[in-house]
Amino acid sequence: MPVVTINDYDTLPSRNSHPFSRQCPNLRTCWPGLSASFNPIVPSRSLMCRRCAFLVTLTAYVLHFILTKRYRDFVAYNLPSTILHILFLFFVAWNLHLIINMTGERTVMNREFDRRDFDKALAVFVVVSLVLVACGFWKGGLGSVPAFFLWGCLDLAILGVAWVATWDEGLSLP
Image (tube, rainbow, N blue to C red; front, side, top):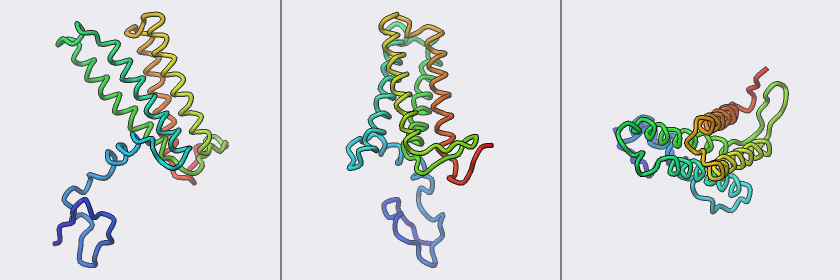
């Protein structure tokens, strides 16, 4: 059985090779694609804007995390909160990545949503995350329960849009 490394995954398999004969068969499923979303320097202007929205939203999440965790908060009883913040950062990054890479149109309740609608959703996510960070600065309520509730609602909205973005083009929700 031939061993195929991850560097030559674009080559066509030979007649005798098995599709599962790679050393790391699951390596190129999600994280390599996610790392490409962090690079906003691409020839396509619309893709560049989507990736910039991705970066601004994630920066707002990181800024919120840093500002809610003061030096005295890094003690053992806040470890679960810190772990949840980090997990939700990856959750949001992956869902935004799915929205960025969406192509075609999706039908939801007999309404067609195309790439521009998903771009508008990304713009709304950027504005809401920046408003939440700005309100936290202004009111000093970055660590309050309503602020965390609003961040959770934003997470669920991003999840919902990413869920629709992963549908097949012919699939529609009645």
